[in-house]
Length: 143
Image (cartoon, rainbow, N blue to C red; front, side):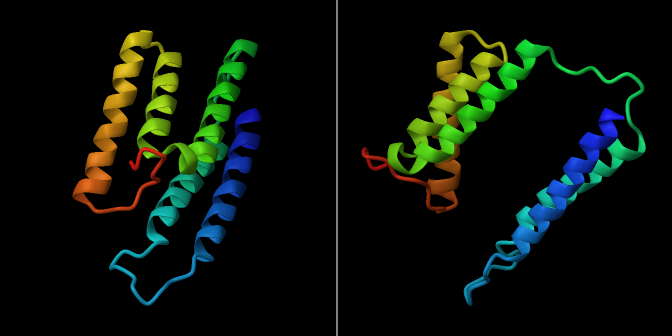
């Protein structure tokens, strides 16, 4: 029964997400895909997986222990802090810190988490800012 409830909450979230994406204002300079397409894809994926969970729930779902719930809450706090401090700290630094923490909590050794965090943030910066020309948050260091 808990999978069906979770699927129902996910479906409600997907409907809200798709509705919110439909309110994105279109400007006269819209590319072929448009700014609504990616959110529509995410919302549709969430809706499909939620409906699947409601139709075919697990017989015996495994819910995380109290420690597992705390790990999930900590990761949620890190992502909220990432969104909050991204404009002030900048994309590269904030992404490196968030990625390093999350990979460490997923089981990577601390020193490798720092390497993965730095590599990921610089790699994403190169692809999205330098190659694709997208605007990313600039921190006090200018990047």
